[in-house]
Amino acid sequence: MNSSKKRAAQSAAMIAGVTLFSKFLGFLREVLIASKFGSGYETDTYFVAMTATVIVMTTIGAALKTTLIPIFSEIEERKGKEEKLKYMNNVFNVVFLITILLVVVGYFASPLVVKILAKGFTGEQYKLAVKLNRIGLPIIIFMGFTYVYQGLLESSEIFGPPAISGIPFNLVYIIYLFTISKKFGVTGLMVTSIVAAALQWLIQVPATKKMGYSYGLSMDLKDKYLNKALTLTGPVLIGSAVQQINVIIDRTLASGLQEGSISALNYASRVNDLIITVFVMAITTVIFPMLSKAFTKGDTREGKELMGEGINIILIITVPATIGIVILAEPAIKVFFQRGAFDEVATYMTSQALIYYSLGLVGSSLRLMLNKVFYSVQDTTTPMINGMIAVGINVALNYALIGYMGHAGLALATSISATITTILLFIDLRKKLGKIGLKKYLVCFLKTLAASIVMGLAVYLVYFGLTGLLPNMFIVELLILILSVAVGVGIYFILCSIFKIKEMRIIMKRLLKK
Image (cartoon, rainbow, N blue to C red; front, top):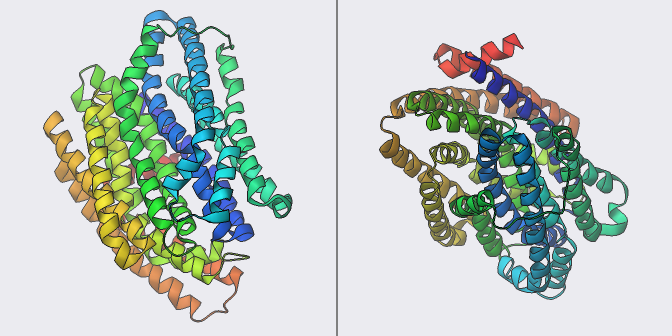
């Protein structure tokens, strides 16, 4: 393995490890919210208000960060570090101005936004949603700061501070939920969200100061690199908006269903996204600059090799995860969420949503990787068009399935949409780059699927066999769940080795070396 790939593997492992701990805290946060507020009136209102607050900045920020990283690198390469930090200051001030305007507009548009996101909300629930949305608007400002700082740090291959930023974010929630949540309720929860967003930015400040960055009031709206960033952000923005638009559509339709449907979709998507954010995002975050460098040099072969290794590792992770979630969704939700105000009905609704979300886990993960490949060859149009197609498919399937399956139909529609559009991205990439090793990907998928099915059967027999024999107690159910997962992981690793899956051998060698 060459030094760049070795460094990338170490960075990805670090990001995955830190993110896993952060997500554990985030999972604990969700469990506590479920326990304190249940899955109904208050949580539905809070989640809609939070969606209304962060929907725009999440989309803009992700697109901005994607375009800032190569621009920061270009400036440093051509003009030096000092000019890069000067550009950082310009971007920071422009983003600060934009976020202030968004807060002002958001305050007055709040009633309309809530109406759009939750058409089923009326009376006191509608008023509470508007109130919470307005309280949480400062989150937009801190999110903008966070994305800009992450772009600067990651362009310099400093991944630590952005990776750990989720830890203080979640700790603030946990402290609130353990202490004063009963007194201040969901209103206090929204205020806590503001504090958490501020800390997520502030944790990155020391690292930028160490780089030599210091804030200044100067702002140059005519800067060519600023204009370039805004130009490149357009198509990426539309592509990044796909998930957010699907969230809006799902929440809007779910608001007219059984009470608790929005919360069930939210909890389920958070659990499902755990796999993507911990493992897949770690891979794509590190591999993106390597892909860009390879394709910029014209080394298509190296680019394809990097892409191929990334895709197969994603398959190795997401295929068994899908099978495992389908089998253990309900017992896992019961063990981790069912307590306090989160009852058996909430467990059933959330587990159903989780099962159908998980069916799109492979597609959603591969789409992240393929989008990075397109961005690395400076094609932002194809992911944008693909995103539009995804929204169209999702809307059509939402209306087709919601009448038969309720909120679970909304989750299934999202999964089908992700899978179809991923296949389309593979076809488009094949046209653009020529042969990309589709046969190898299919072989890897079939091998991991076969290993996952056997693993799933073993997990099913262990979990449901033991639960039928042992007492129905929380600690017993938790231990059986952990044992079932451990047995499944062991069997899966053995079968992947027997099936001679190359990427699994690479992973095992790296783990043994560590």
